[in-house]
Image (cartoon, one colour):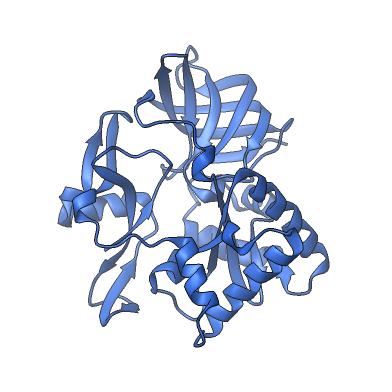
Length: 321
């Protein structure tokens, strides 16, 4: 099985990672002679593990809830995006998707001035389970590199014939694929997504750029804070600080928060998400509407609440006019 690693902090004996591909003779993807099925919805991933592979579910004492995670002694191989990119760049037998992916990264590196080491290949290309029409998933390492790539993409989307923002038919396809009918109306979704530069079309392929911190930029430690779920919550607020909005996990600091549903005595100070599609979602000074899981955050330094979006079928984070 293949799992997506989630977040930056992991317990000593496990890697927090969510099921992405599993072996099944009905699968449409091939790897080493075996067929695999891709699974997207988090709830479906959980159901599959609970039914067939419960050893990959565990109760996390720090997060205060059940998570998906692979015991370290069960890991067969770590697929590293930067290593996969290096292998493709040095290969003499690249197929069309690999050639398109390398061209995308070469354009980004040249126009941004960043070295190739600032990038990696993720998604189905990383693990060899891609198809000819698969997305191109790129990793960018470092907070400053994220801002640089974002500026570069905005320029390329305006002036380069091979880069395009999502059009209405692209957004309808994306809306259906993500199963967002219960979370947000298409009109609001289209307004939100059409502003983004970290996703779009390049040479007839969807691209998605996920920006993550470099290891030296991570100051948190596992267990340094404890989180406890406090139920569902819906808020409106103004974004005070979007400094980490381009990253995965992303974070939006809030002010003028109004609790619309949930305990009014528990006002979140921030919105966070571990899913890349909630990056680049709002900017400083904008008012937002958000719905997700409320959590308490307790450390030696502080006690506050945060809203986590992206793990429930009706979760939403959007600008509010």
